[in-house]
Length: 130
Image 1 (cartoon, one colour):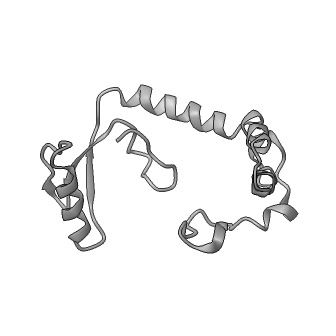
Image 2 (cartoon, one colour):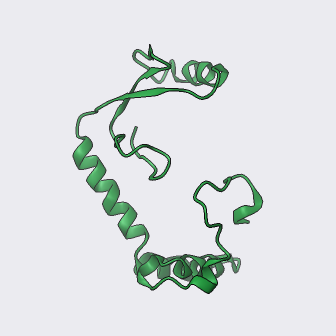
């Protein structure tokens, strides 16, 4: 894998790690030609899935590079760039919510932060972020 998501992936899984097994069954070599079939088989397996990862080459440098990208994306400069690109009025509103939650280098504004769902477990497909 090339990216991991904090709060979704366990801390032991890093960029460049490789999926080794699903529910204890070795995945074998998944190629571009077999990927669609592999995903289809995963979709049909009962949940929850137990995924086992093997440490991939270059994982430490890939994890450090990802951490730098995340830090840059939460910087004041990134927040100001986001506000400058406003084209429908939502960008400034969303940027104010990010700032209210302490991103972009500012202090957390508790009164404004209540508009953002308090849990990172909020369903991404719902209206929670509309």
